Image 1 (cartoon, rainbow, N blue to C red):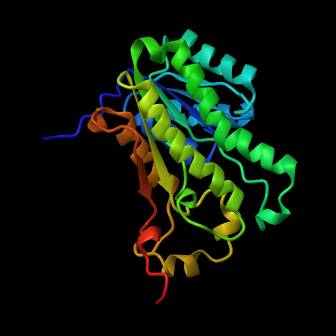
Image 2: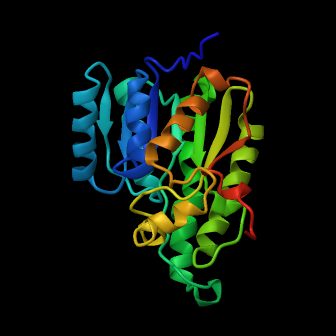
Length: 257
């Protein structure tokens, strides 16, 4: 029995789509026949990604629309543009994230804390509300939130980032309950993936980190994108409120050698 995604002709909106996991996810959904709406802060970067996707998948619609993920008016304009262009938002991928503070939480200031919550946590609520009101309440859909294994463990340096990702895991469960049965809401919790956002964690010691992972390598954005495709499509049609850990075995490695 083959796994059919049922994504052809659907419309997916991806936040943080100009690079990393968001860009890989947009490309993976386009490969499945989805129209893709690309959102991030900078229009020029989105235009470049849009051109790449159009060249690789000429049969799908691509709409790049800049919006700061935490700006309510910009977010609303992006969702409205998606509905205006394609008629609906069938899939929402809440991917955008930030980590402006690195260090102990006792040194975290209010401004950076507020920015982390706005982008990583409240934006999930905001964009879900907008997609629901714009089309999902009537037509149904699928929402995939990008969390982190950091939301399940403790780590040095990024404790507050991880606290917001723990909130994303709970928001995934809460929205799954509230929006059922028409909308499924699931999440992906990546381990350490080779993205620009996480660069400070892996750039200088990638090989050393990989030695301690059961699968002996760091993640690539495409590893996460494939899981998003699964959760967005029909192959996971009886799955909601779950966050799938995709971490190369990080959370099962022994703590003592």
